[in-house]
Amino acid sequence: MDNGLFHEETYAFKKKSEDKTGELKLEGGFSMPKMAMKDDDEAFLAPEMNAFGRQFRDYDSESERQKSVEEFYRLQHINQTVDFVKKMRAEYGKLDKKVMSIWECCELLNEVVDESDPDLDEPQIQHLLQSAEAIRKDYPNEDWLHLTALIHDLGKVITLPQFGGLPQWAVVGDTFPVGCAFDESNVHHKYFLENPDFYNQAYNTKTGIYTEGCGLNNIMMSWGHDDYMYLVATENGSTLPSAGKFIIRYHSFYPLHTAGEYTHLMNDEDKENLKWLHVFNKYDLYSKSKVHVDVEKVKPYYMSLIKKYFPETLRW
Ligand SMILES: O[C@H]1[C@H](O)[C@@H](O)[C@H](O)[C@@H](O)[C@H]1O
Ligand SMILES: [Fe+2]
Ligand SMILES: [Fe+2]
Image 1: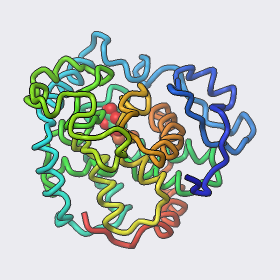
Image 2: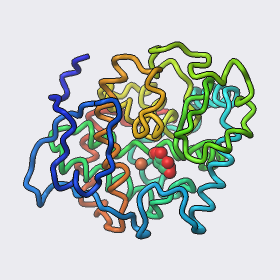
Image 3: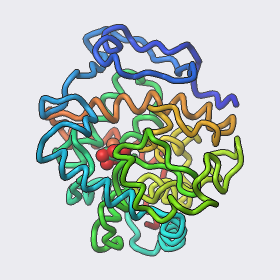
Image 4: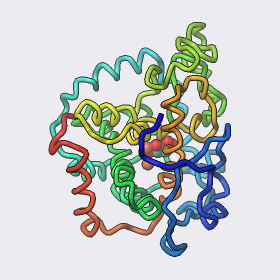
């Protein structure tokens, strides 16, 4: 697919950030879209440690936070089933909860606490702006990517009472397909043994109810903020490019974009879009920090992007 969005090159972050993260391994020889080169001082520098002085995405260390994150994944893995996802898709497909703008939602998100995240305890609007500003530094010309970063976690509002008040396990955390075997790369995989689908023979083989290469659009992901926001964006006629919508929908799909599993379900368009998801993931994960972005200062820029790619109000 040629979506006219980027030039390809083999995986090549700028040396400075590449050395620092050392982590962004791309399985299967994926190539990456090209970054507009800037002075080193201006480039986004991925830190080695999170704000708590630990490795990013450390799900195993002994701490209070890790314990509550593990408890979160226990519940998520037990409860995300094919039946549950079907129910959620039908319920939230109605988009009858509220009519509001993208920016209103950004502000609402500040009331949301994410219990699945070992790296973040800042207000969510800071996470949105930190990731958007970081990616903007390295990809100044891809305005759609800045906006994608700004809105990628807005779906978390479904945990608020006026949006159905879903439990955390139905909103946040890494995502995975249901209807086929749960891959071992899922964090805290052991809790899937308590999921009824684990024992269903239609659902527990490698391809399950799907076919090889069927395309991610044809599979059901565990329900959460990714799929919900994708729904909101598409149903309200957002003109974001396909790669932007793909990022929103699969940014929590770590078993695919970081572990390189479940690739047998992808089609060619998914493979193209995955390149941009790899780019995005670096900024989503490593921009989480204590350094706050001045909301009022950057707001006009993001308002102009919202205007470009979204209607004034949306159905949620
Ligand atoms: O804890 C995090 C957080 O909730 C993110 O928003 C989500 O995208 C991640 O995949 C998840 O693991
Ligand atoms: Fe997210
Ligand atoms: Fe995020």
